[in-house]
Image (cartoon, rainbow, N blue to C red; front, side):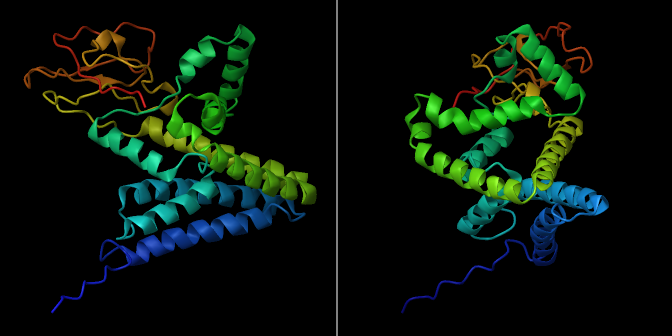
Length: 294
């Protein structure tokens, strides 16, 4: 006699159905309604649609975070499917959802923001006029650095020697063709709607950057072997490959904290958040930085 397997509920937590359904419904409705309002003749409704669309994208981005943690649905495949849908709305669909999930888990486990593109080194290698242009765009709240990183993700399978990424060239190319075709159709009907859509997407990026930069950083335990130098800004996150015993003076980025790994009695040293160019106060121990290579 075999016991019948108990069917899992749709939502992971008993108090999750109502708030999660409302959040997902608002995201879908806000996205569709926002896009529709971009096509009307009334400029006030265009502005309303742009803000509604941007807000729906922001919520979609935060839902991706929850799907990555598996906190909404009880079945991982359902979280993955919903995460892919939200990724299409937020424009992050060029990266595989499972890759995003694994990197985010390392963000929590290793206390490190795992990325493969050093935007600072990339910009420093460009001509002066390019750096000044990026600074001017950032001053005007155009997320130029984020746009560079976005296109790096698109181009990565075609410029890397990593077989795992190269295997995704067909998928990324298909996504690029589909999204380009959809945006071309939007532009054929209304260039104004296309411009407002781009504005909404950049508003989403700016909101997320402010949220990241002002969130309270998680300070690693002073005696944790996996303590890492962590920044709250994506654009200034540690990106270079370091040895496991990188000293505090090498820890990059503003609003960073370092924990000495050998003694719980040692107080973590905090870098001056408003003077990125200043030298860090010396730490009596070495801080353990998790490798950031992919």
